[in-house]
Image (cartoon, rainbow, N blue to C red):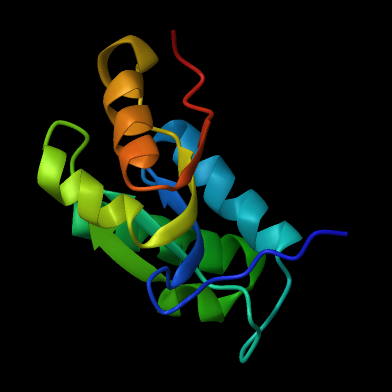
Length: 129
C-alpha cells in the first residue's frame, strides 16, 4: 500500500478547495470520517476558499455533526480561483488538492493549471459542468 507523505515544503496531505460550498461541505465530512487519525496523528489537511468566516463555519458545523471537536483546529487557507498568485501559494502547500470549486467550465482549468505548475495532484469533484 502506498504511503502519502508530506514534507517541509508541503505541510498538508490534502487541501479541500471550495470547502464551504455544497460539495465542499460534504467532502469535509467525508475526509473527517475516513481519515480517522485523531489528535497527534500524522494526517494533515486544510480547507481553502474565498471567505474565512464561511470556512470556519463549515468546520464548526462538521465538528458538531460528527462530534469531532478537533475539526476546529483544521487549518484555513484563504484564496480565490480567480487570483493566480494566491492560488499558486495554496497549491504549493498540498500534496493533493480536492477541487470542489465550480462550475468547472469557469474555474476548473485555472485550478488544474495551478496544480500542474506547482506540482500538486488535483482531483476535481465540483459536480458542476
